[in-house]
Amino acid sequence: MNRPFKENYRLSDGQILGKPRLSGRQARILVAPLDWGLGHATRCVPIIRELLAQGCSVWLAGEGAQEILLKAEFPDLPFLELPGYRIRYAKTARGLIWKMIQQGPKMRRAILYEHRWLKKAVNEHGFDAVISDNRYGLYHSSIPCVFITHQLTIKSSAGKWTEKIFQKSNYRHINHFTTCWVPDQPAGQAGILADCNLAGELSHPVKMPAVPVHYIGWLSRFQKMNIPEKNNHLLIILSGPEPQRSLLEEIIIHEISHYNGTATIIRGLPGSSSMIPSTNMIRFYNHLPALELNAAIEEASYVICRSGYSSLMDMITLQKKCILIPTPGQPEQEYLGRYLQEKGIAHCAPQKDFSLNKELAVAAAYKYYIPLVSSNEKLVSVIETFLLDINRSR
Image (cartoon, rainbow, N blue to C red; front, side, top):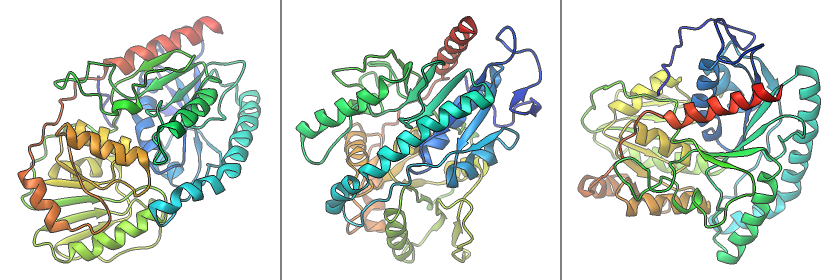
């Protein structure tokens, strides 16, 4: 069931005026996405919509670009300031592992801080539950806490033995939570591609966490509006942590100057005052609201973007032909790019020596096989059960 963009609800202090599905007062739910790119925030949008549709009082937490995006989507919802992990990438794939090791203590401090922050927030605001998208510290001993991730398996460029170490550490964190929600299809139930789950091994490991795991289907804030495609029109979406976002932007600006068609380039910089001048053929935007971006995706003949998982869910929802450029040195994106190319869902190209005209020629000959997206009844059902459990425990 896809909720419309503009619900016919009046919001006040994060509440829907009308009869909630739960008895008694509305369940007060805190939703907080990780600040690792915008994808964690965008995939929380359909979850927030469904919580509102089912009569919840929803509060949000975060900072920076995630705060700007969520406030634009839900201007009437209460928002709490919560610092993110503020991770930066290396300029080279080879330097990424060392860069992440260096930032390990910083991440651990951030996790400890947000855990203490949540204890205080629950006491002050009376939250009945927390939904954390990849924020490891947002668990609490007294209320249900959901952890959202598509990475039960964490890929590593250093080999399988490190993946086992990462998975053990990942599960140690996840097991602090009440339950884990995975934004993918259950095994063998991926629409017309019965053998294809969008995240592959990432979301379907051999060994599962100790807490209950629920597959909630693909999440996207977008819906098909049946806007006609424009011939030879590209949409290029830049996203992800720095400095790789800027490095790809430099490549795209150089390559687009040799393109004969039209293009829209979304820089992935909500709230930035830095602007790149547009021309009659090439339009630059720092950010677009959801409805405008939805339309921009549909009218493009090809979408060029990172192979971040949230972007992939958006593209499949809108049935778009994509050219994916994985973030160099990010094993998850590199795996997803290869996996989806093998399945015929998208064409994948490396950032190094990227040639726009060359990759467009390859994509034109590529046989795309994009799975159909049905209504997401899984999400509706999981949230209904989640809220009933909260109601029983109060």
